[in-house]
Amino acid sequence: MGVFETLNKYKWMIPLINKADRETKSTLMKNFRKKKDNFYPEGEYKANVDDLIKCMLCPNMCRFDCGTLQATHTETMSPAYKARIGYYITIGKLDPTKEENKDFVDLMYKCSNEENCKVWCPFGFSVVSLLETVRDDLNDKDLMPEYCKEQIEKLKKTNTIEDYNIYKTYKEKGVENIETDGNDEVFYFIGCEMMKFPEVVKANIAILKKAGIKFSTNLEKRVCCGGPAFNIRDLNVAKGFAEKNEELFKSSGASIILSDCPGCVLTLTKRYDSIGINIDRKIIHITQFIKELIDKGKLKPKDEIPNDLKVVAIHDPCLIARNLNDITSIRAILESIPGLEIKEPMYTKEYVHCCGWSGTAHWADKDISIKEATIRVNELKETSAHVFVSACPLCELGLNYGLSKEDKEKIKIKDISELLIKSL
Image 1 (tube, rainbow, N blue to C red):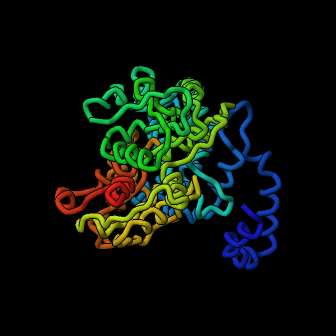
Image 2: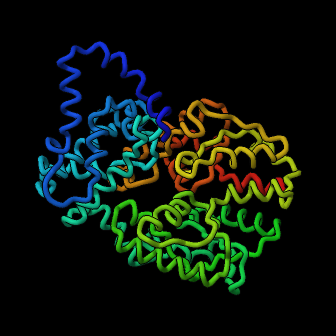
Image 3: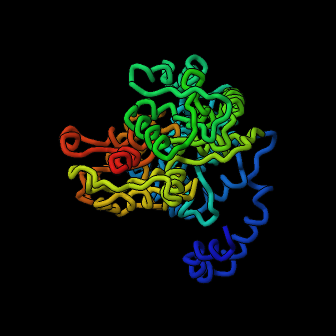
């Protein structure tokens, strides 16, 4: 973050500091200079104490846009409160081994990874990342919650985040498996959760074929990207998945790794890099790739899609908008489809509100995630569109949880590829 952008986020505080008396100003400066002496714990720890302190002492403007806080209407869900509890756990003021403190431990997992906090934070912090450093210390003390252990066991048992190998369901779902000959242009890395949406996978395969792309899916050999293990912070398990995928990518010969899941893209890039595994290939989300194909004239949407799909509201996946920093690809694809009317909800692009179904929140407290999803659905309904379009399997799962029985009779949730294929 640039110095001027940082100062701009702080400017509202300047009049308050200027109005303070000399003694107050002096105390503020003294405490700031002495923070390491007064606030830092002794001993070894992995938690990012420096940034936790800054976060918990901030005026906490991010509270107005935190999805879990909006879902629960309780300050204990605010990003700064979570940071404060993480700090107290780290310095030993809260003993995480005691049963009466279990709720505080659980709070470290009640985050949907949306990173709205980062948009508002004067330091540019992601409380998502800060909480993960606290989870590192909890795991070192063998204090991983049972609901997280269950997810790790699934990963170990099935190589996916389901309690069965979801990739093995491709035959019954009518999804084509394309085995590599070792000379691919693209490896299509289908997300675990996208296998729950076989029509989306089929649409993506059809789109790649129409563009003349040589690619493979290798569903018989597929494993999860390891993203859930990174969220939980079991880095040994995460590294195992990274190594398996690195070998699979090498065997395909592909220079481009293409995924339909933003979480997979984040994991294959930044998260793998964080544990020393660099996938030396171009890794992008499928919307970016499709946009490039349209720009190059390899895909030419020409047909108008059915009338019941012509008015759509965009739901930007948080990870695409705020982590992959791409708010143009989805819109460029939709704008290329003849006759399509696009509606933008109030909270959109980098200010999008989360579907509630990412991170660890839906394991720690599913009701919170459902409430967050319901809030987002209501925001999308305000556009009057009856089709909500996204580009993330977790978003499509979350939004479906947010629909009431009445909503499901008139609202459709579609992946962008399902719309595009009808126009090609």
